[in-house]
Length: 180
Image (cartoon, rainbow, N blue to C red; front, side, top):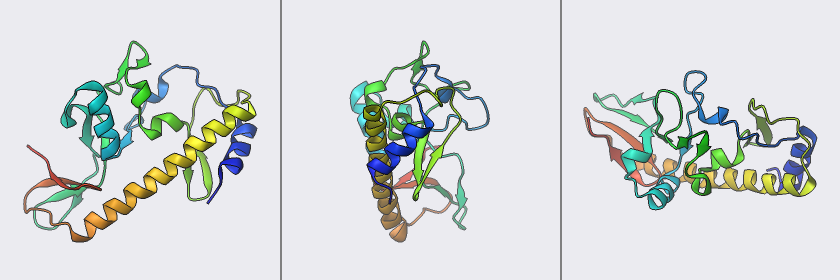
């Protein structure tokens, strides 16, 4: 596993400064703005906004056939309009202080021991060592949070029973039957 100093060194050589353009929040291609969120992140956004679960999150759009007329998916995403994340208002994030890990660390993420970099107009701008270290710490915290969520999903999935004919989301909190 890469440490914060290793990731900071890579970030320093790549460079990045958010330009506040909101391109990462807008749909520019199919599912380009699909933001995966954990149940804990959904609950934090709910607490900050007063919204209910279904107003904040939607099921990950790829469902798997459970073999009994039922389907399941293993993740939640922030709700979107046809054009953008529902929290993008006037070109800015309306939940910035409570935004999910994926938004905090974009355009970077760790995939195993590799730093993955998504397209972003802010790449290539010099990054101070302090800013690189702070960003790297967030990226490493994101990787740890995602590992905890994945372990929780595996534990629930192991004993999950998908009701016949239903669509469900299996997450770290359990099996959630979807209405409609």
